Length: 147
Image (cartoon, rainbow, N blue to C red; front, side):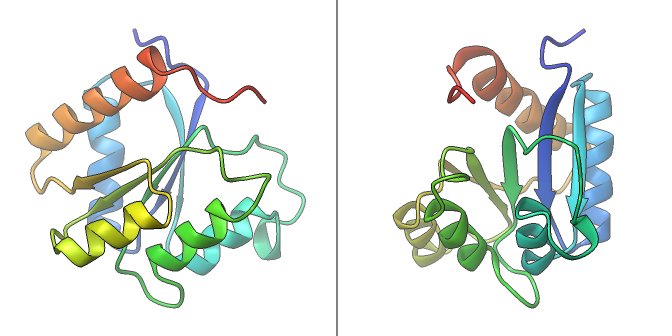
């Protein structure tokens, strides 16, 4: 089993099929992590700031955020900017997981403080491989910020 047990991942994804693929890929990769899914950028901010329906949440802040760029209400770039400008949140690694490969999207994400930009895989096999690599790097190799 993975040593990442107890890790908390926040997935910000408006596409239900992509969220389901992420859940299934985590399971297939045997990555033991607590996955929380929110459906848009506004919900992500509410979750992180414990507002709205997340007021009073007691689960810990995420150890890693997987963030889609193209979402309704508040897009991923706006969410990323808000996270990276907040002293309490800016150390949480944010990985852009998007189908966009547009250079301006990728460059803007890095300019705003993204820790990585990853093209979202569309099939289970490749998604499992990507998540396994993410887990190995972010949960086993990297020294995370000290809380």
